Length: 632
Image 1 (tube, rainbow, N blue to C red):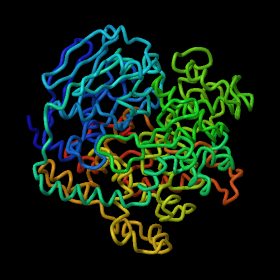
Image 2 (spheres, rainbow, N blue to C red):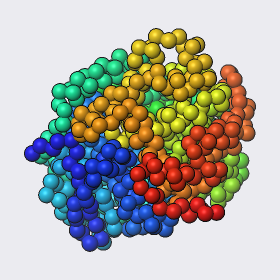
Image 3 (tube, rainbow, N blue to C red):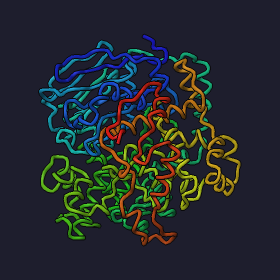
Image 4 (cartoon, rainbow, N blue to C red):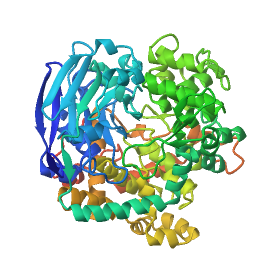
């Protein structure tokens, strides 16, 4: 069966009553919110808009939405991604997590654009999905199994794909993740929400439908052009050669390496965990998402004889220099353990590092110590099974620091542990952490890429940073709604003639003095053209950015309804007050309030961080529900 563009329907499953129905998607919402993350946010809003503040993240009323994008199934470059969206138990705000596993393509080729899960099963459940709807089976035999064993026990056919959780999800670890193949929807505790619904796994029987663009010739032309742009980009080439841990050497040179719970920004031994070192030590080879042209995923053979996925940069940073461990063999083994237990490596690493420093300073007793690797593996299991010291560490650093003190070195924003980039090296990245709706995720606007990796703008100035944060937030919200890999943005944005040929010193001046002009020197038209040729819905270059703005502001509105305040748009005191580090280059703190105020003005937010009702109404083409403090 053929699907032209989008199927226009999600599968809505009530786990309590074990019923399902079709949830139709209007073309208007497809045009305004694109798909993926954007459409998931709109669906969440439409279904719960009057109860947003009262939805407990681990209660049956919370929705878990798996949302595909229109590019999924078309074989567009780097398009095998889907979004998992819910209210986070870690932040009490919306969280969207992108995953590159096979489940999304299976769902889309089963004739569904997404899956909406509500309620809670009476017993541990295996949900089966096909083009005909849903069926329900007991998953009691899978109880307590790791994600690897769970996938093996599901005995998937060639036309099937799965989502599953491990013990961390079953035990409601607040940063549990969800696995699909060898990829993960990792951040914000989406796996805990799945566990709270008593849902161990979802199996989809797909590939019964083929996805066809409305304009196949136009789509083929723009896909080919985009693929070439991505492949010739130097960042793509670095990731292809060394994986995302190519960033380790960038971090040592620029001073964004996390060291000793982000106290320091440099350690000479960090080079032993670099992508270059691991590629050579493990004779790495590709292990990627489907339809990938960047090939950043690698696997290799470790000294114990096992073949493992090589850890990503974030895992390397959080379980390497951040806890003062420089043994990449151990990081690889721990990464495999966390993947099997089903937990986010960033939040796990951040929580363990906080516990080490809290013990060091006398805030809280712990068996964990910086530089001592003997207790880590056991602690990971304690966290996943909510045992011993791990019971509390499963709550994350915000909860821990509120109970014991030490908030100044709890490296989190809005409850979400920050990724492995110290913003004292990159002020724009500090702004990105502070204002991103999701919290301390590096992918909100990822300005460290422009400031320190590509060297397009000076890192230690507030000039232009608010404008660039807004531009990148809008663009990345759109990318995560098309559901194409965010790493493609390097090739798409920077491969046009002007960014490649203009001298870097000129770019470094233009980006901060005339940010809007320099943004227009970039060209992201391949993105809107792929959307239009697939769906037949006209979308301009600037229309794509408006869609990203619409998605970002609606998410902000929902979060404010859920309890977020302007005070949450900040950084830990470590980044704003602690200047001295071991980094041999420039040491500084992040002037976050100056940049946040400018960001609010440019975003048209009021001093409380709330979007203007008229602005949001114009973008949404409808009136939003009242925010809780709008009249105050």
